[in-house]
Length: 288
View 1 (cartoon, rainbow, N blue to C red):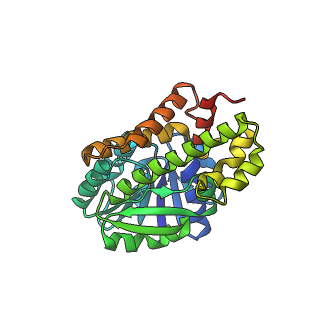
View 2 (view 1 turned 45 degrees about the vertical axis):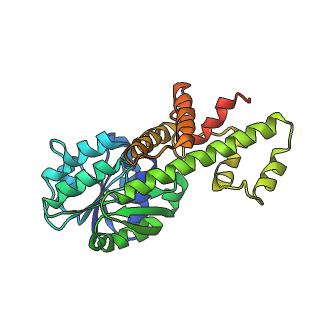
């Protein structure tokens, strides 16, 4: 496997493309806003003028897009990848989408003799840049093994969860837990500040006890410095929590904590924080 097409060169996709280039792959990139792909061209990527150009010589095509409608449009829509795909190519969707969308894509590409994997990731912009993403993969074992060189170039782990859709299902559950973790930390941090507690000492205390979660390491500096430059946008988390809520309904599981955190992210987006980092949920507590 030598030639990779990558569609979606935003915060995450650009980091993934950079690491594919570093690993020696020939990379063709496409983005709806062409300017976002130009820095990758300077690093050796080829800029595709159309989706047909992406598919033309690719052994594998990777998508990293924002939501289900965009993924379906790019892969299944008019002049989409499915119109140009050839048997034995591999399609990997690393977007966070519903399990139903992943299973639909698997079926449609299978009909074309093409392997499809749902492979959303753990990690945000820093991990994408550093090649330290975790891939959560659904699809056939054979396709997963074919994709291993790509996962190794872009990430530190790749776990085959099972059949098509299982990667997307696991990612939604992961994001519920991540959202609850940042909410827990943000609320505790707000309480500490409002109480006059030294926040550095507060962080030291919770880092050594049962209240610790990884968001403490990942977001403490953002909260201390009120730096909400996006690594993973609040609007994307809101979208993912909506998908997770639909999943909970389908499996008939009551998820009260999910309802609370989804409401908090909905409020954050309504207040205009949608393009800020998900840690911007802290601003809902009204502490300057």
